[in-house]
Image 1 (cartoon, one colour):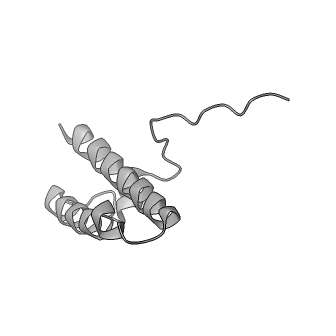
Image 2: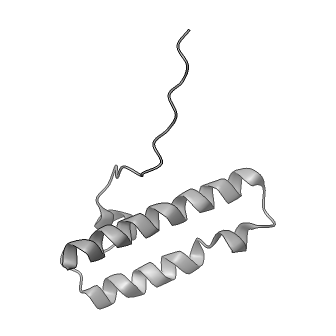
Length: 78
């Protein structure tokens, strides 16, 4: 049997960064910033600290996906 390869640390988008944040492709940076702040607050791992380990892991992964999507959009805007 072959060992299972380790998952890459860098997230690969299965959806576009705009889809992940739930904004249109032509959304303003102000709109993107507001949505990012809202999603970040909703998916703060600190808010899930009293929940099951599985839920904490999901929240952590979702927050990483949100952060990476935002970083991708803002780096493209430069």
